[in-house]
Length: 250
Image (cartoon, rainbow, N blue to C red; front, side):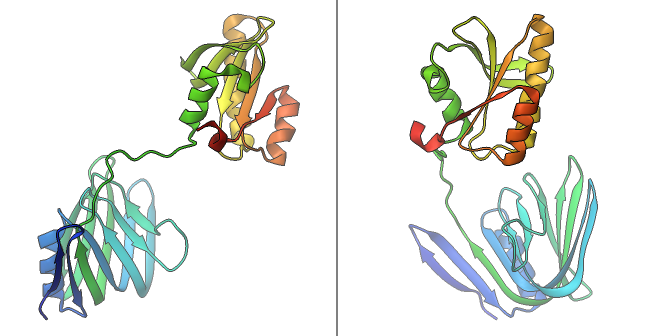
């Protein structure tokens, strides 16, 4: 079957095969794997071996997405995340074994390998996509930290910022400050609802700084909301909470 091509100077070229023989699919994959995003749809099985092991043993329709940077994903009909995947930089190797299209995505360090066998190939597409160079997400934790550094009164009147991203052996403290009474204050920022893990993180910072300074240190968790469990642990550990919506800071 011939490759059908659509070329447009704005969106790049697009090539696809429908129900191709394995060798035709292999030719397109190897031709475009380093320059195009590949979509491979068909009945397939897959496995992963690396820091753990997992298998998709049942032969069923799945979708493989392979990107020029080495990203390799095996998707099913549910969930946002792929069932199996390899991050960049990984290398895609495609071959035909006993008439079956075989895809191997190999990451060197740490070594991780995803193997996909596609005995029934329904569709192979190759498309050139763009890359946004100045991508930014507004309302991030960094935006929250910047806003508090520029206006500490968001958290508390009289608060003074001493340092941001203050490095310690237990992690980097988002903001280290001093309140109007001279008490040291550790501030941990979260852009979405904070759970118990955020409280435990703040607790580690507070305990470390208290031991280092030889005096009590306040801890404040800044987030748009907190879970009921997080609130319970805040009270248990004597920590504080300030509600701040990231989207209101930009």
